[in-house]
Length: 262
Image (cartoon, rainbow, N blue to C red; front, side, top):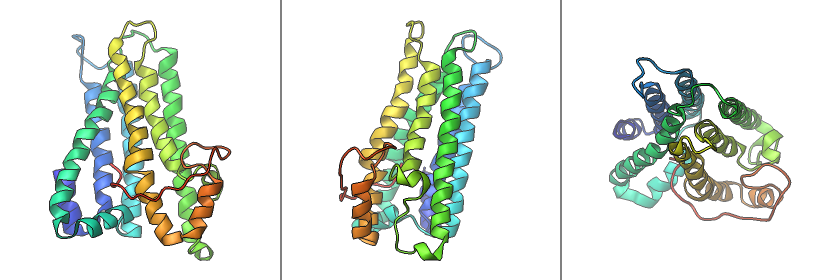
């Protein structure tokens, strides 16, 4: 993350931070997943599966952020931080990214806990985890594609995207990002109690939910949308849930800016 900080400062494109974070979490997670354990000389099938899921998630998200950064310029959440921090932006950003590195440790532990489940054969939880991850990656990719298509239409300038998945959740990409971390919990947890360390994998979805919904995902992004879209976005907030897809559960309006997505 120190390298991500340097690249962001030198290039003036803060989007590289999130791309590098995604590649780093996936790369470190996949590497830990493949390390032999219990005296084995080579990784078990479950380890290869978990490493592949981490790598697939990392590459999909990281490459998407790279493409978005190259096309769309600086991330508005980091722009807001630059305005708030003023002359201290470089120093405060550096230490903020070290906090992001520490937070990533929880996610990597979730991946490692899943890979180290000692069950000798693949279980229902393994297949469920694979299915969850594929649904999560496909859903997030579809949401990103729908938003990109909406923005590419000049007639939609100044409007709020409510097409496709965006008509069921104001942040379907965040929802599917969170969903993917449930995959490791499904693989890791053994309800018989034979592998108590598997419960550590719950730190992934729990932490990611807190991060996306309450800290660095929805709050700063919706604050930016309220500034740029005004009443159009307020109307959207009243019609569509912030996170959970489906019929509107309640009316909500988030006005408080927060930190960039970790």
